[in-house]
Length: 240
Image (cartoon, rainbow, N blue to C red; front, side, top):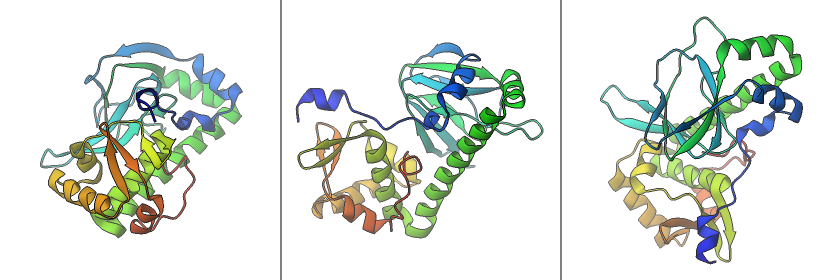
């Protein structure tokens, strides 16, 4: 594998793949594109959900904060993903904060126009329900991994999800094309960085993972699957 392979990873389809070409065209007609600088907030947890969002380019992380001020990374979005609250009960608010992890191009869909389109086009409304169902299943499986199998299981699950989302096949396994630090992994599973360091050292000792030019390489996917009691969810669910 050469350096170009690492710098240009192939990624899985975004969650917008649940929409038909016709429905996506209708949504595109409502979009207003904006450029967002790395590190800038897109919306904050608890603010009114006035827009739905589509990530044209870049990466966005969705975070929640604890009462003690600890920030947890709940979601990672990439090109081709919709994100944001899509409920229509009362006055919905965003249930997490979204921060641009890189320089991004993001399309904003005004809530009022989106609601009118859903009222007008039944197929689009059904596909939006399908999108919401997929996002709920994704959240439920992440909570399941953490609650049932502890921090090691959650870390194994996170690595599998990253492989499904950013993985590149190589001669000795799967290279995760998106660089991630141990601190970022810790924020994803609610653990201390030192705990993640120890768990990764155990995985390396078992021959399951290694590091290559700052990227994680998974050599033994079955080992990780056994540790988190993998249920072989479809890849649109088993993703970050």
